[in-house]
Structures are given as structure tokens and as C-alpha cells.
Image (tube, rainbow, N blue to C red; front, side):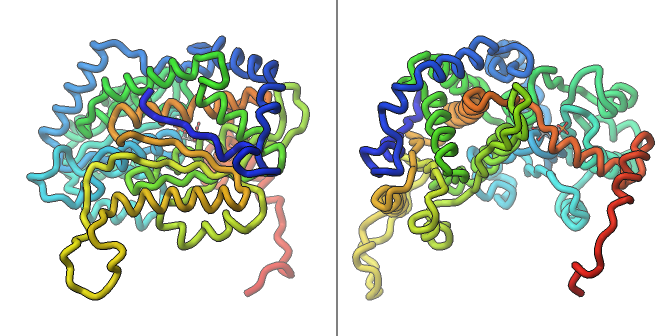
Length: 464
Ligand code: PA5
């Protein structure tokens, strides 16, 4: 494992009365054993098939690479259509591992087509996409595990209609690739009927745990990323998370510290990477943490209404917007910093600049500055008694990104096990999905529509 996890500043030895005592960790060995067994003994089973996603064969990787190469050779743009777990993995890996202005690079400098991940049904955004892509040379990856999600299906209908008009019925089929559950769902059926290439999402891999399945790997292949190295990183993290000793297991330890903090009233978990490329890793984390741990009942059906609200923050940008609150506001947060030792570029602040300003900065690098600012924020929070810990990247590459993604999945699974909840369902989201079907007039949802229509708004509470 290349990542390092420093949880010193979660402990009372660093932050005093708001910290966790070593005796609390040592006194919970039974709970650690139970949480560990719950996840590790069920690894690869039921909804925990995600743990096996980095184990695909060399042959499958070769096939993915060949697919990626084929698309790179002919596509001006590659568009992912999906939402939630079917979009956030492709988004965060794209941002972490490709050039920060990839789509704006001149064609000669771009190693992959322009990449867009459309994860909303904002009509202006959809219309705007068609202003910047040439549909005749654009390829679309429609990703939906259930094959039933209204947002993704609406996007599919729009683009397939446009494609047929632009390139003809037969060619349009070659512009669409579908990633979905085999044998289930509306999208699978239409893909079979129309003859689109289909990539499988394994049945036991849920949306927010699917980044290392075809949901992520197909777009990563098109991006030209080294999939084998990413999966090797994920496997290294898997091995670290299979260590029974909590002091050696990063995901088990931080899951315990987060759950313990939450139970002590720290209901907000801030993810704060100090690297623009990792900004959307915080989005990935927010989804997996929120949707997995925000639950009404535990496994014994007792009401728990648990979960820590995730928040995203970017270092150093948000030092100038949110850090004041983190340092002096309520003691209700745990801040996770993500730092990078060696950035992909070094930018000097020239020593020979004559302008009579910022002499203390001259001769340093932006790399030194961002590192100093991360360490200073960590220092300020710790001094103020605020819980925080740091995940350090030696550098951001396919291997370390694979490690981080796998860590997020294990940390969430362990946290759910400590809380004794069903980490892998999302009944709250399903309710909203059904209400959308009803409002848009889908057959079979008449009762839900009647329920929605029975809700009367009180005009007295509407300000006009
Ligand atoms: O994590 C989840 O299960 C959800 O966020 C889903 O990914 C999201 O609702 C999209 O579902 P689907 O992939 O079935 O379209």
C-alpha cells in the first residue's frame, strides 16, 4: 500500500478532551472483531461482490484496453450518461488522472477524446452538451445498473433519436455502449433488441460500490488509463483492509474513529483534498458515505436514524470560506485531509522577480506553498481541539487512485458494520424514484400519484 493514514489528530493526545482515547480503541476489540468479520467473511458474497471487482482476469483487461483503443482512434468525444454511482466514479477518476483542462487541450496534445459525464437532467446542460460535441464522431456509454433510472433513460432516448437522424439507424447503434445488469431492466432489453454492445455490471455490485467494475473500467479504458495498475492498487488496499489488527488496517481504524466521533456528536464528515485533481474524490466520498450510512433502522429493525453528513471542501480554496467554521464553530465535525507529497508539476515563484511585493514567497514553489498551507490548517484545527486525520498520497497515479477508491469502499462497509445497519440498500432514494415515475405518468404508479396529489399546500405558508 502506497497511501499513508495519519490519525494522530483524532486522539486525545493531540486534541485533548474532544479526542478519542487509546483505551477506547483497545476496549472495543469485540466490536472490531465483529465489524471486521461482517465485512471480510462476506467478501465477494451477496452485495459485497464489490470486494472482488479488482480481481478480473488479464484477458478481460486486454479486452477493455482493445475497446478503449478502438474508441480513442475514432471518437472526438466520449460521453457517459449515468447518475449517482453510475457517474461519480468516472468523474472523479477523469479529474484525478487526466489533464486538469483535458477537454480544452488542443487535439494534438490530448491522448483521449474529450470526456463528458452527464449526470443531471438539467435541460440547459443537455442542450449545451450538443453545442460542444460533434454527434457524428461522439460515442456514448449509457450506464445504469438497474436499467430503469428515469434520468439516464431520458438522456438515452434523446441522444439515440438525435444519433439516428445524424448518422442513420444502422450507424447509430455503433455509437452506443450500454453498461447494465445482464438479463434485467429496460435498458438491457432495449440494448438486446437494438444490438448495442453490452458491458455487464455484476449483480452483487451496488451503484456506489461499482467504480472498479465495468461502470468505471469502460470509461477508464477509453481515457487510456492503465487499468491493471489501478486494480493492482485496489488489490493492495484490499490486502491492507483484510488485516485483522485494527492498528494495521486503515479502513477499519478510520471507520471506528468516525463512528465513535459520530456517536459523540460529530455528525459532519468533511472531506478536504489539497489538490484540484482530487476535488471530485470528495463527491465520490460524499455519496458512498451518505447513501450507505444514512439509515432509519438497524438490522434488528430498531430505529436508529444514523449517519454522518458528508461535506466537501477544497484546500486551499476553502480555507478562505469554510475553515473559520471548522476551527471555531461547533465541535460537530471530523475533517479528513488528503495531501499529495509529489505533484505532477512544479511551479516556481521566481526569485528574480523585481516587483516590490511578496518577497517572502519569492524563490519558493507553489508546491511548497500548498503543502505549508495544508500542514498549517491541520495545525490550527488540532490546536483548536478539532478531530482531523490525513490521507497522504506519495503521488497521484492510477495505482494510488485505485487504493483510495478501494479504501473508501472498505471504510464505508466497516462503518456500516459497526453501526449494524444495511450499508448496501437505499430505501430513501427508491421512494423518490417511485414518486418521479408517478409524476411523469408511468403506468403502474397511479396509487403513488394519488398519494402525491392528496398533499395540499397551505397558501398561507407561501410568500409571493
Ligand atoms: O448507489 C446507488 O445505488 C445509487 O446511487 C445508484 O447508483 C443511482 O441511483 C443510479 O442507479 P442506476 O445505476 O441503477 O441507474
